[in-house]
Image (cartoon, rainbow, N blue to C red; front, top):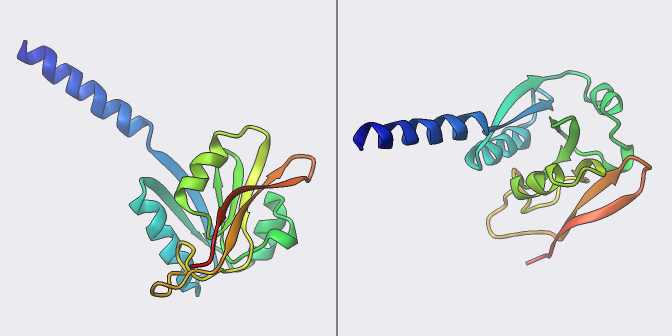
Length: 144
């Protein structure tokens, strides 16, 4: 019975490793909040492929991030863009919604992942973008 248990444990570990999320993140080399956001992602089980870019405007344009949704860094997961300080939980929501081509936290709101400022949290929304350009709120985070 022990070899069967070991085989089941190995299978479970292999399946878990195969399911680990991986995300590309593009950021300016001088951005501190970008590296803090990457730490948030990694702490939540998302493996990050970190790409240093000198022309983030070109990256955003290439990925279809509308200027009104722009922030400092841009991620890509499952072919969808993740713009700004989007919490890891909302990245999972994005992945589960096939009608969305991306999600964003416009600007740099205090209290969002990577923008922690003690106990301060500004109100902010995670905005999803559909392929037809329509936006909808994925999550709403109130001011505290």
